[in-house]
Length: 94
Image (cartoon, rainbow, N blue to C red):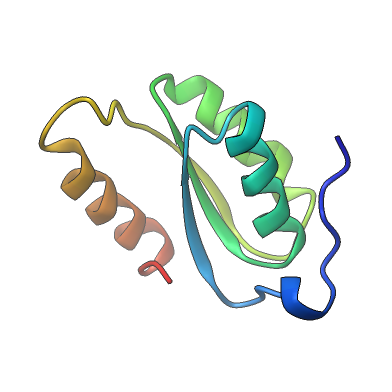
């Protein structure tokens, strides 16, 4: 699958995005689109190593910063902890 190109309505330079389940399938395609369009992207997955490898490959696609985070969103406290970690690493979310 080829990622979307940064043009017109798909320009996200300077924006911050969080993609859950972003290491494969639709989530990966969405993360690639944001990264290619210039956004900084936090990718989360249950496996931290998968998230880190995905973030590393996303870094090569765009101009933003990409980080990989381990998060199991089945845990009730995880969404708040994930938001706090993304805010710490990227400075917030859009």
